Length: 82
Image 1 (cartoon, helix red, strand yellow):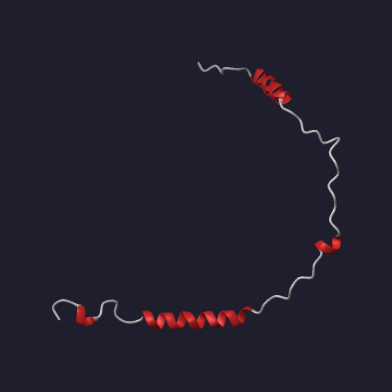
Image 2 (cartoon, helix red, strand yellow):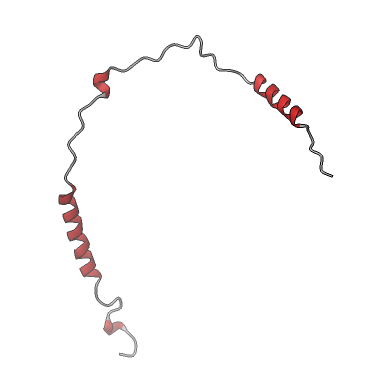
């Protein structure tokens, strides 16, 4: 029959002792963090850029690339037996 190495209550006591041995942060005497002025935090957002110009340019580049990729991969005159 299976017997656990430690009883659940013993394991709980061991865990409680381990937690008690750890060092606790000393926050009672810690200085309060300095606050930033709201003017530096609240900045006007730049207007969004219209993506249609860049999308049109990218589509044109992709179409040109696709045109260059059309055609035979191996030139017909370099194939053996022709």
